[in-house]
Length: 298
Image 1: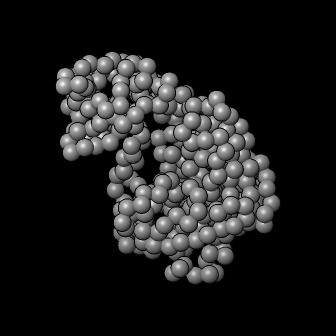
Image 2: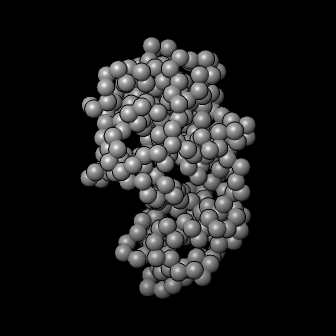
């Protein structure tokens, strides 16, 4: 570890372990499970915690374990499905809250480190460098205009803090990418700092709901292929199928996953979306009445 022992000791009190209990009937339980474990980081002395949204989405209860092995309940304050972060409040003043920074202050090759929960009061740290600061799109309907990837492997569970060498939180760990040099995907911290008041006051970022159909997809050359659909989602109900190649959306040709997401999100939730898909040696038309991901996973 290049991060000093003193620096790690400074940030440890602000790192927490999370355990979320999700009802079996919740829409996310089928693919994320009902008992989820994650990391979080305290960013306000009043007990405000940042983590990854998938850890607490649909949770009935969330327990927070501190570094001294104390466990307290937390309340979910906000979800942001667009960025993938969630905000919790454990309702108690704590020592060691860390100041959120901004990924815009990072540079390629800059040293960073991750401190993550590894169960109970155990914490693990790992360091690396920033390897990318560009856009990222995922196999589900998710994209970031600016994402951080790092060569630091996540040493614990998701939702941990990515920190610079001043101990500032510059992002929240989302996924283990497992790519050479790009081991970990991180959500930039400014998605919280830029919308802090809305998240704490409204429980969400005040943006108009955008069209969502509930598909998983991957790029194959200049084609986008539907890999699967979430049960009960607009895409499944309308007749989209795994294996469909998306040719166009509302007559706009689709050549990449980013183009597909851009075409969808340019329309409001509830609007009819016209898919042209290649299936069984023919182009077929499938009309999908889009939904709202926030409403579906509420």
